Length: 293
Image (tube, rainbow, N blue to C red; front, side, top):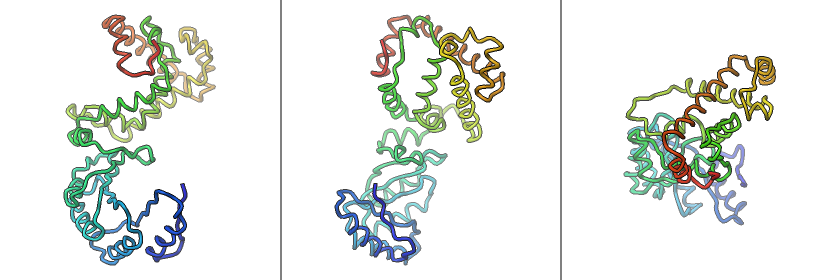
């Protein structure tokens, strides 16, 4: 992606004009103006001047989800200046729900084009009203979570037959952790779950501690042999010492991982016994094409 800018040039309209000339061979061009406040009349005029030069097909107003009543005032001033055609609401991965930013949509009589739930391009999501309202009410966003899981399942196969036989190895656990990691930041995943009514609130420190622990588990499993991953029962005290040295962790953390694996294995066996083989197969089929039957 080509970026055009002129370091040290304070004449924003001139930079916009030069940038259009330098990028004229491209079909899609985005002109990003500096952040400004509705009360800064000189910057509003500058935005009008840029608009007159660019003559953009779409004028997108980007609003912070944490912005309260000021959102409406700013949206009104910007809309009067350049006629806004859409809104992007950012920072919805934080504690803000974006209710205040919706007033910007009402003021401009437009619609929300995208919502930002992180810091990377992949965190810019297409806006869907039902999902947004669900998040706003603390009901999570299961639909998005399922879509992400299905995308991952296309690349990662889960051997359901082995699971139904009660075989759940450390390799299976590793795959589950890798898939969880691909879903996105732990905090973002938790916010998609319908736990608003449960009053479950984890601090950033607790999220980070959980992530750090899962990262340690992956490093520990990377330090194991293929045989140990397939059958954790062969891990003796001497093997555990070797694994802890290789992974740079304490033996207690290795024991903790093995206990976590045993608990997950027990849960899988319980599911197998309670659901029955055919019901579990149907469940796995519904979960997506990545399931190996």
